[in-house]
Every structure is written in C-alpha cells, then in structure tokens.
Image (cartoon, rainbow, N blue to C red):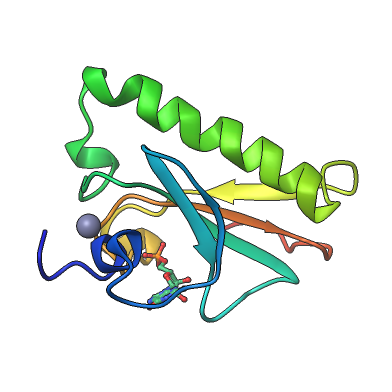
Length: 113
Ligand code: 5GP
Ligand code: ZN
C-alpha cells in the first residue's frame, strides 16, 4: 500500500528505530511512547486491521505474539509485566490502518476501558 505509513517504515522509506526484523515481521519503537517500553510489531505485508485478516493470516498474526514475547524478555519486562493491544477502528482509536500489535510495559499500566 503506497500511502501507508507502516508499509513505508517496513520498506525503510520512513526512518524508524527498529528492534526486530525478519522476512515477515518488523518491530520498531513507537514515535510517541505511552510507556517506557512501547514497541509496535507489524506484519511486513499490509493488512488494514483485524477486520481484514483471514484464516490464512493466522500463523502470521500468531507470529506477532511470539515476537512480542521475545521482545518483552529483551526489554526486561517479561516478569514485571506488559500489555499487548490491537486497536480496531474508531471506538478503539485506531489511527494507522496497517494491523499492529502494541507492546507496552516498564510501568504500572492503568485499567482498560
Ligand atoms: P493505533 O492508534 O493505530 O493503534 O496506533 C498507532 C501508533 O503508531 C501510535 O501509538 C503512534 O504514536 C504510532 N505512530 C504513528 N506514526 C508513526 C511513525 O511515523 N513512526 C512510529 N515509530 N510510530 C508512529
Ligand atoms: Zn501498510
């Protein structure tokens, strides 16, 4: 998707602080962090949101969680705790329509809702 900011981050067209990259997934630090650790984990292939995922995407979406687990350990927050968030559409405040997993931690997180 040519006008997607996260596709441009995946391709390197827009600079980012990457913490992980492979042939399927890229992870980088959020530009406006909401916690000491705030990493975005995205598939390299464009998917707008959870509403657009299909059953064939299940291994890819599962992989986002495996990488989140790995990065949480790397960031030293696996034991203290972390939160994984996937926002979908307006009521959740989705701002970037390229599916992404937020990894948040490093402080006590407030309750959801
Ligand atoms: P959403 O609300 O869509 O779940 O989250 C989008 C996230 O992307 C926000 O936390 C926002 O700070 C982050 N973000 C938006 N643009 C950029 C960017 O150009 N670079 C990086 N690293 N993060 C971005
Ligand atoms: Zn995209």
